[in-house]
Length: 414
Image (tube, rainbow, N blue to C red; front, top):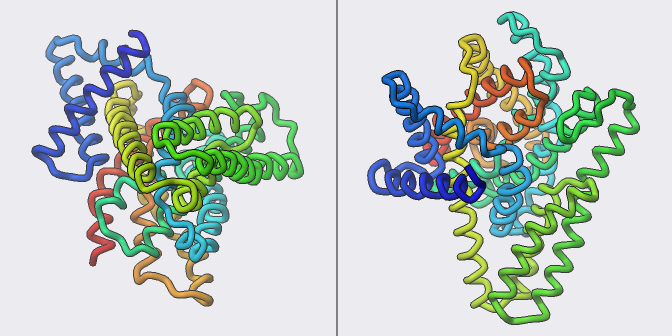
């Protein structure tokens, strides 16, 4: 199946599923699409047992989609920019220390806590997964997914300060988590697209790689964002201005990969610059309206395709009962570690500033995992370790989106 045919099938499914959800289910779009896609996958499996050979065609479709490539090198840049575009910089500055600590120290602490906890739990279950793979699992499951989080936040009516904390953390911590993941790949020398293939690293080289990716990404994002801002300010034509932002996102993300800095962090910084300074000083009201409509549509279409893909991905998983049990056991473990990695820094910061009531519980339960976790685990080298971690990650992601996503609104409102 050609790439055009694959995209056509995914968009068609996303359109039909969106209609079904809006017409009948009336639940948040991301959750509804995942539910319908999972039910469709279950139906395909049942029909396969009855002799209807749909499962082979479905697997052929999914095997034609490189999930990691589609998300990390395709959808992610646009989704991050669309999310950052509407985060108010003045609100983010007020919450800068909370966001910075949770997106950096919180992610790194969670990575090691999840890594070591999973290493011992997997061993008790008879899964002998090396420690470095468990640490990689910790790095990919620790960040909250901005795509899932922002999709839910749209529907729950959270207070502005709380929304900024959650959105700000989720936009930045996935970039930090990707950097931590790449650093661990380098330490492991396990290959993969970004792996070094060797384990000859030391503390200095790790620190330099982290600084290059994270700090370099932020600086690079500001530079390309400022260039785009100056170009936007010099003209008044909404078609050209919208096209400039699209070029900024796709070209900037690709260029960030070429110069070996964090693309996600770069695009978030560029999005914040364009969404605030650019919106205020470089755009007419007409341009702002068209820009918002364009990126809102891009956000909705890509979100729909992504969550349909996540739901269908179950068809190509090795649903080993041992892997499924490990995934279910890791759900409360990951939530507990999220509670600790959020609760400790927030408790310390409460000495100097006030927080929304139930902030730790909300940040814990509202810390949804999503497509980024699945995309990262798919970068691991093929083998038994990858298959086990893929299923475990999938179980946690599906629980996170379906159960946490459906109930976090009630937690925020109560």
